[in-house]
Amino acid sequence: MKPLRVLFVCLGNICRSPLAEGAARKLAGERGLQELFYFDSAATSAYHVGESYDPRVRAVLAEHDALFDHTVRQVSRRDFQEFDWILGMDRENLRGLTRLAPSNARAALALVSEPWGGGEVSDPYYQDDWACEQTYLELSDLTDRWLKRWLEET
Ligand code: 4NP
Image (cartoon, rainbow, N blue to C red):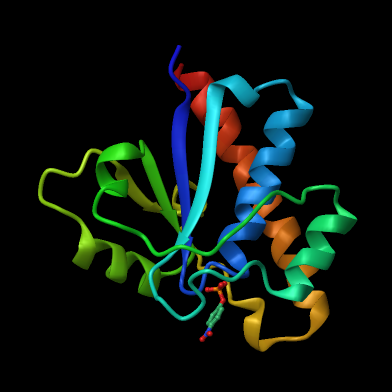
């Protein structure tokens, strides 16, 4: 079976989307579901292309044993054909994604919180260190919900 391909997207790809990717990889790994899912993350902006995580994000991912190799990249039009789901963190991300999306996009586009009320995942970049931990916990909960949903659908 081909893995379900999921791309998490935020503005910079140094905070929220790598936190989501790390949480999703960790949960799938713990449950022996690595073969069923492929996770990646990307930025709507080019601000940090080629860099790795924000150092605060690295610390949080390390604390949760959820580090993975990460190099910031920008979303490309090809992603809309190659992924099944593209999940943004806030409405600005979705606006950026919608602008980029080709008319024949294969990927379903949604807010990461969409099935559970559609609230925005606020950006820890401008906040204190604890905000990164809180964002990890929020995204771990949301990705856990998505995993359950996707497993029910397969
Ligand atoms: P992210 O956070 O979108 O969660 O990765 C940000 C990272 C960098 C910037 C903004 C948000 N920036 O303006 O450089």
